[in-house]
Image (cartoon, rainbow, N blue to C red; front, side, top):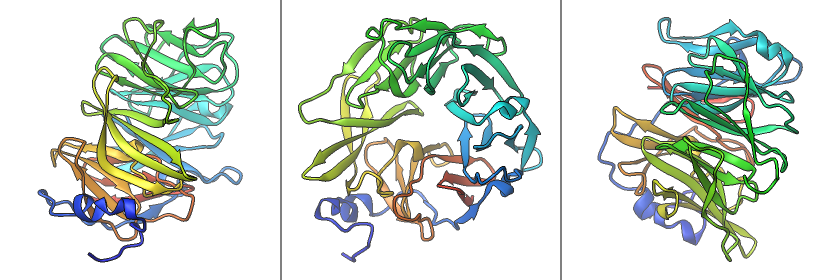
Length: 353
């Protein structure tokens, strides 16, 4: 076995045997380069450099986190990132709450309006949350019931929902004004007719049917091991989540798959022991379903892992796909006919494919 800097602790030895090995598909070694806000058509605003990418399943956008009235979307006709005018963002910094099922949900940081789009080009004022406090943290949308939900970082008004058209500015319904009946969420996703979220303590998971988003139940409660959860995402029929424990001053982070009812958790063969800001961590935000491969793809520091079932992963090294210490990849997308994009701090990694 050869030594590699990404695998420098005894509990990561699995990688040499399970994480690396023969891969049954032609998983590519890609040619990585960096793209900045200007590569997506933006002009710098102040000192802001942060750029991020999102895919809702049918459209892709590149978001520049500054108060500038534009949005960049990938134009499939011209095969170019194209900036369009979006007056909403002249009111403040855009923040994407949800990308999936053909829908983008967003907000303007500091305001209570919900902005929605289907194609990344035309954006609608989809509603408002009357009486909400602080910042919206996350959201989700279920097209099968036309229900949207957003959570706020405030215990007396944690969650609002709506069945109205995302093209209409109507008041969304408050749930949980008593501060106890509905949790505050750090992360939300939609999975097979249910909204599933990680609560503000990071130590429990709860769900609600999208047909009755006012009634939430805890599916995985806090345990005696102080287990924490992050970055829950539903991807091609699988419900992924990160879990971590702090043991002897070291973070033990594992990629897991939840069952469809979000009541049982199965650990995959991907985990990392070290810092919580370690970019070797298998993060669900960096998982993509590659239909052409018939496999899930996951990006981490200098690695591309693939899996048939989301549980057993094998890896191929990606030279050049590396960030500085304490930086992390926090979102990967694939643009068909173009390539892979992965968000880092101040730039996006890109590899044509």
